[in-house]
Amino acid sequence: MNTISIELLRRLREDRDITQEQMADKLAISRQSYLSIEQGKRGLTFEEAVMVAEMLGVSVNQLANGLIPNDEKYRQMIFAFIKDASGNDGKIPKTKLAKLLYLADFGWFYEHLQSMSGMSYRKIQYGPVPDPFFRIVEEAFESGDLNIAPTKAGAMLISVSDAGSRMGTDMLSNDEKKLIKQIAQKWKKKRTSEIVAFTHKQLPYSICADGEIIPYELITQEDPEYVC
Image (tube, rainbow, N blue to C red):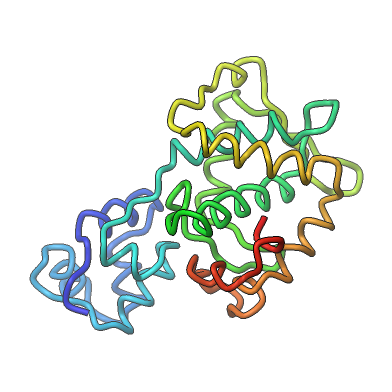
């Protein structure tokens, strides 16, 4: 693989607090050799690109084309779903929220061949989720924009604080907001276990290996009623 986005590589590594030494160790090369990659003096083999993409939580396609995930837009999607899909108490289980975001991104890709946020989703035990989800939610909690409270059963309930209620949705188009509302309405009154089961049965999740980045393109093989 001769071409990667050096700018994206550096940004994602720094955003995730991954050192050059850690990247070099992952590739089984010296730090100097890795530095040559970030300086554009040395290319990556396809196998190395796959390892780097996995470590950064993006797809090889994103790494090659410089498609940068939009954290701020993803944050607005989070707040939109909390407002539209939470219960009467304004709270929504963290796991359910993650699945709603996945359905929005993959549902948007199904119709437009691009995701809503640009995030890369990884297959983990509890379903598809992008690596930045946990960081973005935690940052919003630490800034006072979100409230997080545990239940007796161990679930985490998320709600928008008074400060967070001012979060705008200016980065979302009217059609994107419409899809979010449609998905929220469909799943609002259903249990978390139901949406987890639905996403687990979808082709993108079911055929990928644990820990693997899920290719968006797989969703186009689903029948429309099983997309979102």
